[in-house]
Image 1 (cartoon, rainbow, N blue to C red):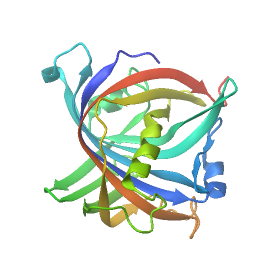
Image 2: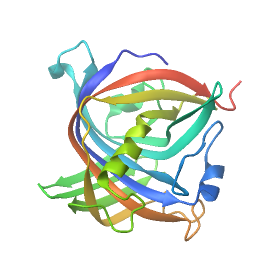
Image 3: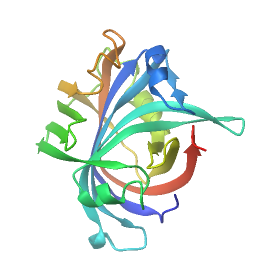
Image 4: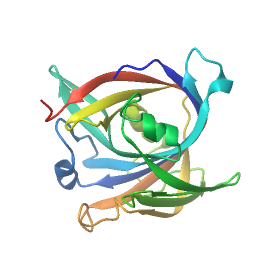
Length: 243
């Protein structure tokens, strides 16, 4: 799917990250993806992102739209003409924008599901919850700013975590055609992350022991980005089991 370059502002982006046994994660991934590992673990998570001024690059900012969005992601790698590529496989996208829901998978990469979002923010505290209209997905997180990552995180520093997640700029999402994945790459014109301390996190997917047996998945860390000028660039589709 080819779209014009889309520009906007990431008003707020929370990355909630879990480490998971790659042997448990691998069967959940469609072809051609496999888990990308870091210190022996796979990484999954939810990106909770509020976008503003989103519009084709050539249009002025006042033409842009705003929306709350969530993406359930997996850090993955795959082979492409003899080269190993890395990025994220987006299992599911949810949004509060009916426009995104209608356009997703048709004129904009990735099928989007409509959901209701409940957001509360202060200078130091953030709370985001969502429930999809189809009752498939629910998640919530309460967190606050903190100077450092949790001592239990696999990442030894905020810089190391920042570098790892910056590599996940290229994402592939399910399309309306079985086995075909639509590509979208995030170009941040300024990149800055800070750690968050999580007071409570719940996820209907990651808490489901049918997918992740007890002991196979653990919360690792959460990161915050704010005020990030960015662009979305379309990338060629990937074909897994499609004809």
